[in-house]
Length: 157
Image (cartoon, rainbow, N blue to C red):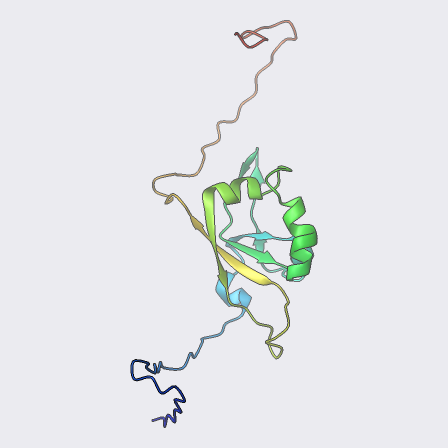
């Protein structure tokens, strides 16, 4: 039971009050949220602080799509992280920005809710996994001599 006391200094009769239930968030640790097996894009500045999270893998030029991103504080993200990860420089933003959309998850430090420690973003695929399955890698070995020519060297006009 709650008692609500409201004071409306506005004399207009067409104004109104709205009351909603209080927010009572359910808090959990980052380890409980993400775990150790889900692929994560971790910025360089945060990787040492989260040794239990698994970085996304890259094998034979094919990158695994991360499901989360752990970012440092705003200043570090702007000055460093967004530079080395940029799509223009061939960083992981090349495929994450093309294939995924993000949503920021509210995060807090235990006992220090106001500190800007960084943030966590959840990635969502733009195209569902069943419609765009993971790449299948066909790996093999081929001996090719320097004088062999499979096609034209120059592009035709």
